Every structure is written in structure tokens, then in C-alpha cells.
Length: 439
Image (cartoon, rainbow, N blue to C red):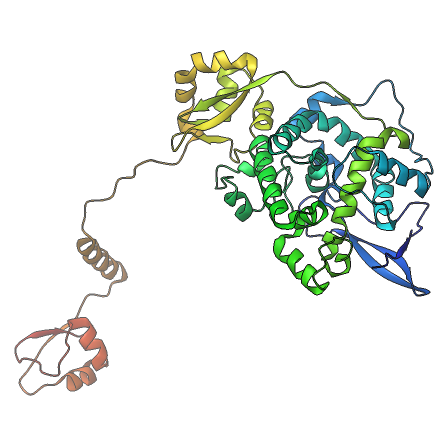
């Protein structure tokens, strides 16, 4: 396959024109560029990774970022991205200590230009935020013997935001869908979303990547399958005549997946060579040490915060899997992560925490009384009350010899069907001398 030359779209001196979407809106995750093919200019869309579509303000909302990432005092980041030739970028890519192939082409160059150009501030944030998460990623990858460069997948998935949610419903650092998450042991219900748990989701993602590698034995195909699912990759391989190479099936992939592997290569490049592009990482001071404890009761995070004196935002950031700030430890043991200095206080005050403002935080009743009146009695009582309130007193007629339902219905201006319904009559025979309700 011949890769086409992508010509940058010039608008006010920027690399290309596109707008970053608002959080949670339905938006296309792609950009339009102009390509040259056979002497003609053609408009083409290239898919954007999620990290390029999330607004920076949302990424900076996390408690850890607000408290432990600050602008560097010894580095004034220049807005100008130095001009770097293709040959220099190609050489830098070849020098990176990676197992996964990192080839250079026009598409990869375009994503490198995006990261080092329009998204410079985002890269500065992500380099700093990586201090929180890379040790978690590296530990899991090392345990399964997978390439370390896969630690940069969450950069193109979520921009290292554990609370990121895509318009398709994928969530967390690794952007698991609910179904895939359940396959790999991540619980999702109204109270818990373990896709947002940095540690549990990381180990699940690494197991998923290993399973995909056992299928394809080719890392670019694995990365593409992580984005679009094995089914779409298998279709692309089939349409490409059975070729099992990402760049050979490129034209048969979804728009988003066409940009996924190039953006992964670009993310590896920019996280390695950001200094070469005048990008300064923000200063990072790692948060105080934290530890975990098992909880076997239903507890609200605010109960812990107010009794132990720990900041609620800190608890929410350390335990992002609890969607309603409720730990449902009464159904099965759950993990609570606390700043280490509060572990002892939690253990000593656990009974006080459980009793603190329980009625305020847990409004759902465990039992509810049911009235003892039977349904039939209640129905008759309601019927009588309704009749009395409306002034419609029942009217009865004493059946005379020779009368039929038809003659009685005609006399009172009603119908035979109505008479049957009021009196529970099924057959045609009626007995003289019996009272029958007519209204």
C-alpha cells in the first residue's frame, strides 16, 4: 500500500483547523485534512484519539492534579514548536528502546505535529500526571512480560484521566466498555465502576492485551484491536486478502482506528522527546503515601471524611470506582484507599463512622410495612367510597316472571353486557323474584 502525502491545512498559521469538543457532547473524533493522490487534492478524515478531544479543563479537575501539579518555576515554555525535519524524527524514533515497531510516515508525522503543536499544554500536563500512573502500568506490564511502551496507551485513550468517559460509554484510564470490563473481572453497577479504578483496570487491560497478542502475534494489530475490537480487525484482514500487517490493512480500517496506531507512535515519541520541542513538564510533587483497608460495612465517603478529618476530594480521587461515594461493603468486602496517616484513625473510629449521620446518607429503607387489609376488602371499600363520593347510589330491580335481560336493559336504558358485568351473569337464564343491579 502506498501511503498518501498529507498536506497540512493552513489556517491562521496553525497546523490544521479543528475545535476541541465540550465534555460529554456527541462529537466526531476526527479531523479533516487534504491529501494528494494521483495529482488530485482529496479531503480525508483521520480519527483522533480520545486524549485529543477531551478539554484540558476537565482533565485538570482531578484532586491529585489540582494539589500536586503546578507550573514549573524554572522553565518558561515557549509557544513555538521548533521545526524538525522528517529525517530527525525518523532517527529519534529508531533510537527509542522499544520492542513494538515504530515506523515513520506522513500519518505519524501529522500526529507528532498535533501533540507538539496544538496540544502542547496537554502534553505538559500528561508528562507530569504520568508520575502518578506510570509505576502502576509498568508493574503490571512487567508481571506479564509485555513491552513497556504499552504504558502510553492510556495517553491516547484517556489523557491519563481516570474519570474519562467516552460518548460510547467507555470509562477509566484504559477506556473499558462495560461488557469487556466484566470479562476481565471489572464490576460495574449503580454503586461501583471498577473501570475507573487505576490499579484494577490496569491489570485487566494488561491481561486483555496479552490475550490479543496470543491471537495476532503482532503488536500494531493488537493495538488496533484494542481500539476497535478483534471483529473489525479480522474483517479488515479478510478484505486485505489475508494480510496480517497494520499498514497493509490500513485502508480497510475504521476512520478512528486508522489514526490509532499512528497516534500511539506519536505518543511514545512526544513522551520521550518533549524537551526537544520546547515543552516543559509541570512540576509534580507526589501525594502523601496511601494504603488500603478492607471494608465489610456500607459506608459513605463523607462519613469517613467528617469523622476522620480527611478531605472528601482526596477520598474521591483515591477511590474513583465508587460512583455515588458509597462503599457497599455489606454485600461483599470492598477496598478503601486512604492516606496512610488516616489508616489508624479509621480503624479506631470505625463504629463511630458507621453510626455517623446514617439516616442522612442512606435514605433507602431496608424494610417497609404493608397494610394488613386484604386486597378484596380494600377494593370493596374503595368502590363504596367512590360511589358515595360521586353520589351514584346503586339501583336494583326485582325480576318478574317472563322478564329477560333484554327487556330489563331496555327499561333502564342500559345494555345486556352491562347487566351481565354488574351482576356476574354468564348464561341467559334469570330467576324471577331475584334482585338484579341495573345501575
